[in-house]
Structure formats: structure tokens, C-alpha cells
Image (cartoon, rainbow, N blue to C red; front, side, top):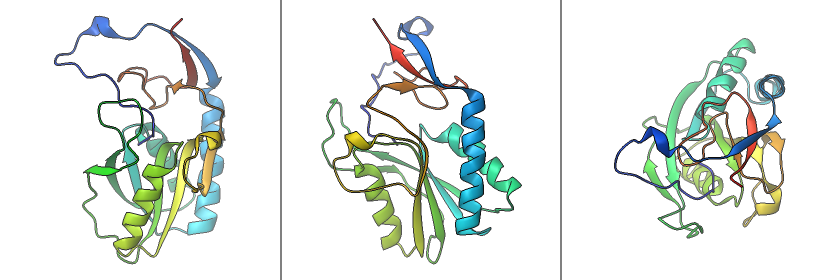
Length: 194
């Protein structure tokens, strides 16, 4: 779950409502693939073969799937679960409070957990999730993010594994969305609606 604002909601699907805009490639599919492979090697060397992966939905789902396949090639055999967190209501500014909207179902006691998210911005959601898993008895919780926006940090939290560090750009693709669109793009890009 990124710390970006929630997308506009609608009562019915309307294919004509895709937000207009131009997407400029920031990281190509090849660059992402190479970086995911390098992350998997680093994670396997650090955490070993028996871990639990907890992916924060929705934005991390493509990254998580590719990372899991890359981890498999490095001999990692994870248990996998998912959670959804929210730090926004209907506004565009974070309330600072994080809620679990979909919880994991597995017991985490004694587990070495790799917590995966799409973007680390303010740090609130990942700090909350890490503390929650620790409170439930996880032996270790390490953070892995596709994108890090360090200049957006509101609280002190750093990821153990970072795909790419970027500035304050609005990005889409590779699981990241704008109004629930653009997740299917095989690359990460910046979007301009002008």
C-alpha cells in the first residue's frame, strides 16, 4: 500500500473514464527485471530459504509476483500472505492513522518476514505494518519496496531492500495506478495530464 491518495471511486465501470494522459518511461521492463533479479539474490543471501512474504496490496502485486519467481531461482521457498492497509479516507492528505482493511491469515510467530510494498513515501504504513507483525511474534521483519521516495518521509523508517530511489514524481505502471488504471503497463513511468 503506497501512501498516495486513494483513487476516485465510481459506482459502475465505464471504459471511457480512463484518465487522459501521457506516460513517459522512467524504468523499462528490462531495467525492472534486472533490478528484481539483483534484489532476489540479495534477499536470498540475507534471509535464507525459509521465509514468509507478506505483500501489501494493491500496488505491489506485480512486483511481488516477479520477485517471488526470482526468489525461487535462488532457492527460497516462502509462505505467502497478503494485507491491505489504508492511511487515507476520502481526502488527498494522509490522516496519519493507518488501518488494516484486509489482514493476513497465517500465524507469524517465529517467522522471518519479508514485507513487500510498492512505494515507501511517508513511512507511516510500512512502520505500522512492521510493528504489527513484530507484535504478533515475528522473529524478524525486513522491508522491501519497489520505489523509495526519501524526500517524502514523515517518520523515520528505511527499507532493507529498494528497487529504485526516485524523486517526488507521480508514477504508474508495473502495478502502480492512477484512478485504478495503468497497472498493466510492463514499465514504470511518470504521467502527465497536461
